Image 1 (cartoon, rainbow, N blue to C red):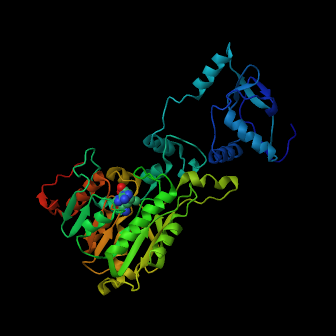
Image 2 (cartoon, rainbow, N blue to C red):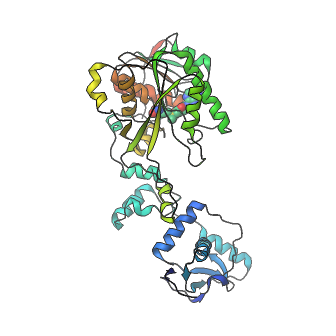
Image 3 (cartoon, helix red, strand yellow):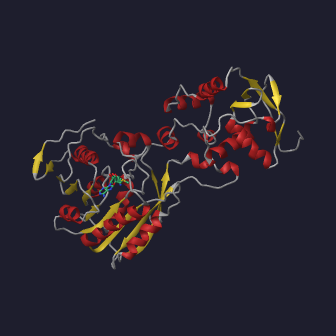
Length: 435
Ligand SMILES: C[S@@+](CC[C@H](N)C(=O)[O-])C[C@H]1O[C@@H](n2cnc3c(N)ncnc32)[C@H](O)[C@@H]1O
């Protein structure tokens, strides 16, 4: 083969050598490779050269190395060159035996654990960036990075309870927690919202709705069905707010589904008659980035790591005022870019909820858009972050959460923070915090 300056070096030996175009596929449709993984493999071949021989049966039928050869084919088309490839011959008497050997070679008997990978990286002096071109299916990279490479967050100041296997809460339960209320109910449902609000109105809404089907707790048949539900939530908000009010709506895109969720939800708010005020950028400090996305950068296509989320702010005609005694605090975040550590993997694991926003985010929303004792409606209470921030800032949270297990977590978190009494369906109950 002709050598050029785009020569891929071969760094291994075989018992013989074959040119690329003499090799024949054997596995058929057995395996497939995503475009993202093909990209990573390409970067790895260009970075390390050809580092392992191809295993073949029956002179030239490939038993192991299909993926690499597929990517090599693309590289050759792009003008790269490589010498004849090192081959290792595998003996098999029949095609069936060869197929079994192929499956044996591809079987995975060991798994990579987060602790194991972290230790290995330390011993081998590997950095988190060094992993970006590898595909390790046992590892959830986002969680791994958050757990082992993120700075501590303020959430650590709290003893966060676990989601119980068998929740005490049942659907329809209503809790009174000091001045706060929590209903295990549905924020798309008008009656549930009325029941939670108990005839009161809210001057603030702080929330983070599901980002379509990105989490284990959400499933909608279609994006349209999801937006219909969000519209119901927004129209229910309309019924329970009174001027002056603000709505702080933390959401995010679904880049994998190519959905601009913030834009679509923003349109629903303006359609409902709310006024668009601001888009705050919550920068997820503490370097919790999506490594798999970074893998694309090396192959000449730019898909940036996801490092911020918008908090959309809507109001009515009036703009709510904050406590003048908080002016120096509010001055501390006068820009529309809020850099706040994300709740990291280990904390999420403890609390069992994978989509918490930090208490500091909700706290700033309270300080910026409300006065003491303001009632804040939280339609997606989750792990109770807004309720915690309300308690810490002297505001009141009326929270709705569909999932009974998360309701238990919210109550336990409240009890841990305040030691206050729990009233369930109008009766004071003794609340044991599990976990
Ligand atoms: C993104 S999480 C909110 C997390 C919350 N901001 C926190 O930090 O604790 C969304 C939550 O909404 C809840 N949820 C989904 N649909 C709901 C509905 N129709 N009514 C009430 N809660 C709902 C889910 O169970 C989930 O806990």
